[in-house]
Length: 371
Image (tube, rainbow, N blue to C red; front, side, top):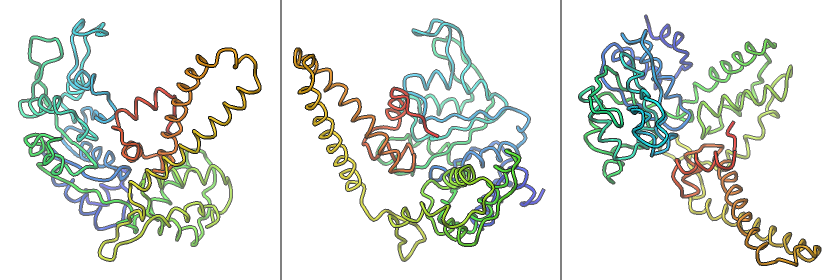
């Protein structure tokens, strides 16, 4: 199988030398059981490459189990990875296999590996090195044969330096390291990806393939795509859904133009960075929240003046309303941070100065849906 056949088989749409080089390395190492560490920003398609490594390996007929280590609460991550015995803790109503056992004979893809707690990293290292582990509450060792692929959007060397990631686990994972560059650094891939997403969308809905004007394509190519391929896919599908049967022009993508003003290209590297530092972004967000708080207080004052019922029990009412105010403020802050970061949960958590795990909990608590 040559490179182009490989890309077609595993749905890798790219023309750039950078991705072709990554594909060449994958084709060389996939047949072995060596660990692979994938680097890349959120949305660059790390899981696609993990699937291609597994699919081209000798384990292709066995399961590929994908785990987002950042999305699983710290308290249950160990149970999810290694399983548990019935009655080993409150809520363990039955014996359950973990992801390592489910992936036995196949491949375990550990996405967002940098988010794994240090305590879990110790057990993770042993499971990878010795191919054995103990379920929570078990007295015997379980042996497995699993190939490990890990992925992260953080610099693990820096994480090791600040004691947030174990050095021994880092060296165990980085047998082969592959960097997936962001879309803005391989603009030659934007056109084929856009056409691919258009074709896929139209095929799924059985609708005619629309024309894409050169002006519209130019906007797509010049936009920095902070959300990378995921953002491009969502944008294409949104425009198609809102403009069925129409020729797609620059007018349909004009909402992207304003966003490009927040990015600038350094002279030495084709990388876009925000003009405003993060602390300024946070200041703007907080200023908006203070304005929202002011509006709420003014509305409350009007209601208090107009209602005899409210006046009868101001103290208890104000306490209740203060709680509700804080809940609404927190929910609003989360929504504003998500909108500002193009619904990138990791960046939103950083902007809010909370952990990604806390953000996931808040999204569930406030029933905020991420589309």
